[in-house]
Length: 119
Image (cartoon, rainbow, N blue to C red; front, top):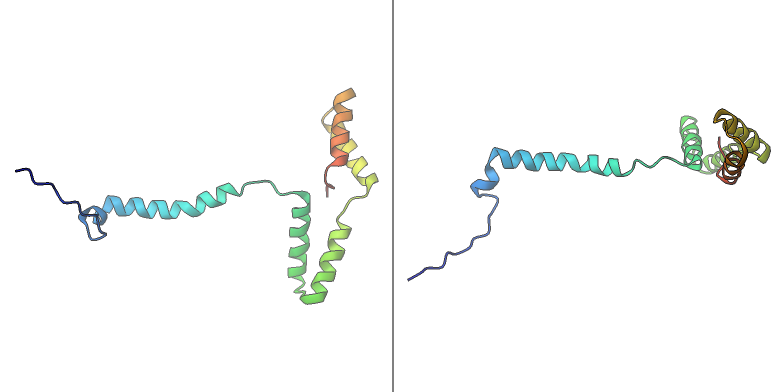
């Protein structure tokens, strides 16, 4: 009568997995994975992150360690913050560059002054 075929799961010794096309596909997929991970991290850095990166680089350049590094980082991050007057000046200049007038200017200035310090 009818004989039911037996199913064997493919093994890596199978000719399917040894074909050059398949191996090329696997290699391409493995090489693409890190690129996908990098593409997912394309968010722009916040001003705080920029300050941290700058201060961290300076501390590294000076080869600071331990408490000296902590103190330097603290001082560096405090110095990088803008005063309210500096924010006002920077936002005003940016609004002028964009030629904003009336309600658009008011809205922009409000958002700019509320936002993180620009340095």
